[in-house]
Image (tube, rainbow, N blue to C red; front, side, top):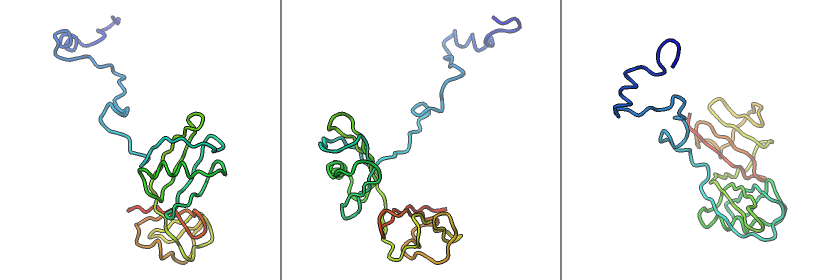
Length: 173
């Protein structure tokens, strides 16, 4: 008991002791996922585990293009086709995936759908942003247009995958 006053007000203590209310800790983690009913946004469209012998390293990041070819962004130079085949049981190309060795030859793979657009005459650079304000290439304002990206959304971002193939993300304002 404190020097002046009680630990809890008398009316709260009487209500609790009478079974009318349950005392809740003041530092309850109400904003944690699962407590307030809000779930996390789904990050991956497909998740799989597969046996994939012969792959070097312990992790890989790759993109599978619409034609089924695999572009390795980070990881071993060995074929990742077995990992792509496991994802394609649930998700058709194109997609971006990451994989990690669980143990021995067992791998876990996560993949997310992407939109791939072929830009016939792309600007020099590896990143494009197209909005009502104009065109930005690699962080610098640029002149001209990219007809393949127009009309996809209010803000369109594209990153070069390979040659004339670009990963595109479009969003409204």
